[in-house]
Length: 178
Image 1 (tube, rainbow, N blue to C red):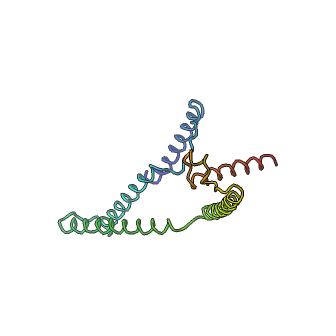
Image 2: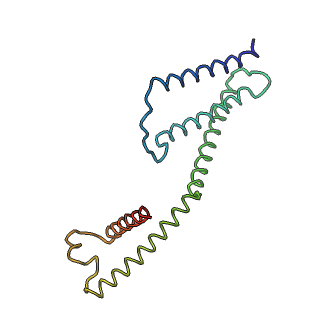
Image 3: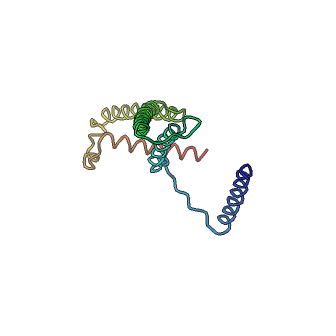
């Protein structure tokens, strides 16, 4: 009887998955996709489940560490609590260590994006500096000190953002024309 039980479970699960797929395809609409940066709130749930799994695994290892199941007495309960405490603290230490080191490692895409942003900022700062110098030489006032921008209370950072947005629009328009 026992050797046939896994086979029965596989057949049951296969039938259940196929019937659920047929129900979903025929009786429900496709959900509207929403863009998300990450899995967000689920990260806390996954962290909790991994913590709980580490405690459960080591508890089961402690209970069934021999060929026989041991009886529960005070000494064994004390050792079990010590085991749980050690496993929990070691899990916390490993989690923090891996978290700190994984933040320092950048992916290839992140490195490429950082390089492009640096290049763009560098060219924008050079362009803004040359524009300021040209404006000072032509009119005697700089871009940031012009009366119109002073009325609008535009700072140098906001001006750079405006110029960045304008350049992005221009470059996207040029790419679309090609």
